[in-house]
Length: 347
Image (cartoon, rainbow, N blue to C red; front, top):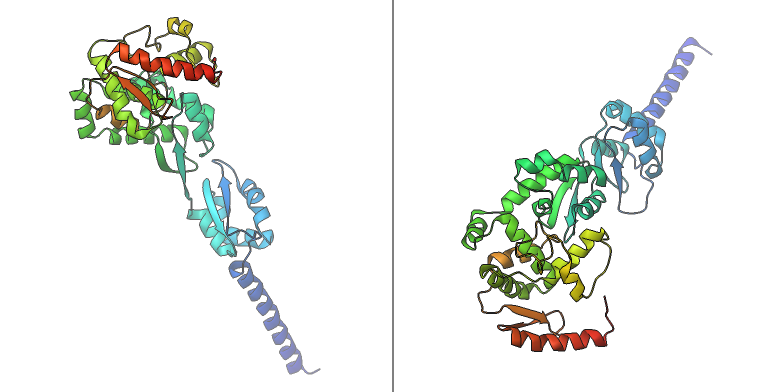
């Protein structure tokens, strides 16, 4: 073979090799490399983990791990791990996957409502962000934070307004708490503060009363009327005599918050607890549950009427019968007692 022929063969071989390398590089970067049939898959990258941990998480979602690693290395991702929640879409290529992992931290919608205690709230939120329940509870109960915001530990639940909020998954417990403080301050607009002042209640007291209204009725349209009853009692110096506060007192004393209590007994009314509004005239020291916004606004805009009593309406379930006098109330109450006895509800 002549020298020219050898050079030609070598040149052709080089072109083939370079073409192969180019093709491999192209396919490594731009060909689909996902291995899931759903429209998308979610990857969670905890704070402080290294590249190998990320690779372990993402490997089941890839067709070819080696090609992903090559692209990740070339784009400097191995030294730039960012915690968060990331959404990979079906048929993404390695270039797109790495770009998402570098900058595509996707927010999560955090939802919570009607939790009875900070412990319950911490557990609910921990299922939705990276911070665990213990970290969240410690942040919520931090005495320095509470003192700065003039809240006792019993009042702290008031700070968390039930709603849906957007957070990054890797939000810390302290960041969550701070955001909720901002949302609380945003909720208490000048208009709401003026309404609270007009009825001689602080925002914390409004939240306590709203929590009782929340527990008394699930009917949003009835809440202003129920709030009106409690405001009538409160303004006239009466004890609130609210059954939900007694139920909470029982749970608080026994520390059995999973207990279901459907009926308050006469002996329960003597339970010595600051939450027992049959025993103490003052408002409870904190909310007995997390009230909905509708319950908070029901207190601020309570219905002005002459009712001082109410009892469950057995003919219109979910609603109540209201009375101006004790005699009227006792007649209504007899109907309820007959009904609850017939149902066999003893506790």
